[in-house]
Length: 131
Image (cartoon, rainbow, N blue to C red; front, side, top):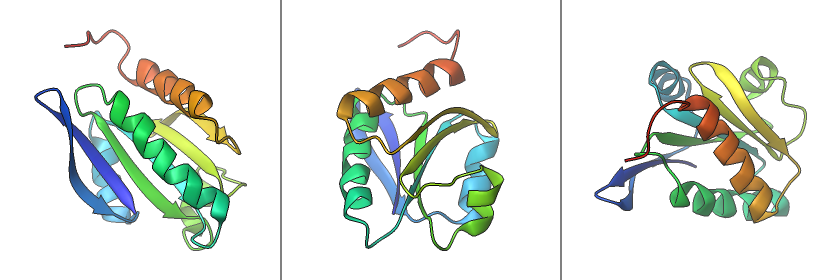
């Protein structure tokens, strides 16, 4: 499932939940949002542990609600996998305006996910002040 988070009056609100689909993803790529693309396999215990952890990390710092997260199926979304050179099922990409600004694979530590998210956010929104 993909989760799109918005920051509303200082609190996180979940606006939509969906799996990766090409149309929504392309729309998101045209926005100025940071797009988080989380590859997983439904029967993978590691992947199923990683996704909720990533959601918590995103919820902590969404930079004015400018983060959209998609959950892509590693086995079935092969075109997407090839486009972004994803080789491992536990890969998370941080993409801004069609450019991968950060990537993490095989890491389940909260601190590593948080650091990589912040790197992606900092690159995507460089020069923008926090409100």
